[in-house]
Amino acid sequence: MDDTIELDRKKYRRTQGQWYDEHGISVPATLSRRLDQEWRRQSSAPGPQAVTHRPQTAPKKPARRQSRDSLYKPVYPFIAEIIRQTVPKKQAWINHREIVAALSRRPEARSLIAEIAGIQGKSAAWTADNIVRWFSAHYTQGQSAYQDDFERQRVDGVWAYRPRMSNA
Image (cartoon, rainbow, N blue to C red; front, side, top):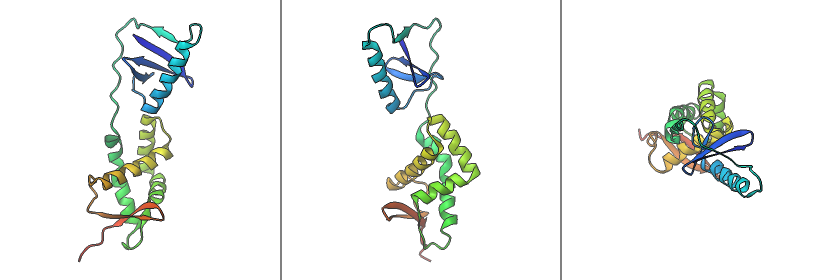
């Protein structure tokens, strides 16, 4: 059985305990919890507020959500290029906030970030910040393709990067 509710002027459908938006895309966990709360609230209220229906046709299969890795990976080369270009003398550091700002100024990165933000239902600013955080997390875990290219350290409480010094 499917349950449908409206929240913030958008319709959501619950199928087998999972929430999907009107396009059949599963929603993030935070939104899912909010929808569960609203669904329970509407279900316990007097009167028929919760809309329950059985579709006349087979339910549309929800689109598979792309992982953050697959969404964010195309932006990582822009981050690497920004680090290389911003720190050409290999003496200064570029921090997280500066990388986010530089990404937002690059038209090709900005359009990619806007596309990802649309997929995730987040703002472009939040998405750019989160992409740099994931870049950093991969670096921390030793899973970054740029592991050998950059040094990283905390500068004023924020992660910062610079091209790795060569031994030559």
